[in-house]
Length: 212
Image (cartoon, rainbow, N blue to C red):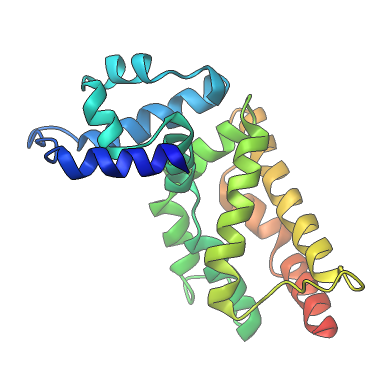
């Protein structure tokens, strides 16, 4: 928290770094570089010095955008978490309208638009930062997906059903994403969707509904 306050103070006295109109924004390049690093090495081993050298910016520019490499790692993971897909899947299943046919083309379209991010996330989940990625994905789902669908996890310790179902579902999903990377991306995302949906997520949602 103190680092982030310090970063905000720096922002107040520093001008916004000038953007190079011919290249990606420096912030985006830092995020892309960190995502690539997360596939190959532990986040704790990534240094600001190595990142700014790779991206081609100075240290003050880095700290204008991020308080530290931990905050950058969070941003990199957030950038590749395709929250639109689970949101759309759950919404369609709740409406009883799930399909991968041309009649409901939004799911395949979302998969295609997020293909690069999905592949990156699969690779991270199959690498040295799997635990970090799992924690961040679960947080995004809890904060950004479930509330949008009117689903809340009960905090009642006497009935942990909703939390157990959530952990089971997300744990299985993340394991499959890691498996996809382990196989060298031999199977497209659509293969996994066809194998699991709508039966599995519909059954899990039914358990949650019964307990509400």
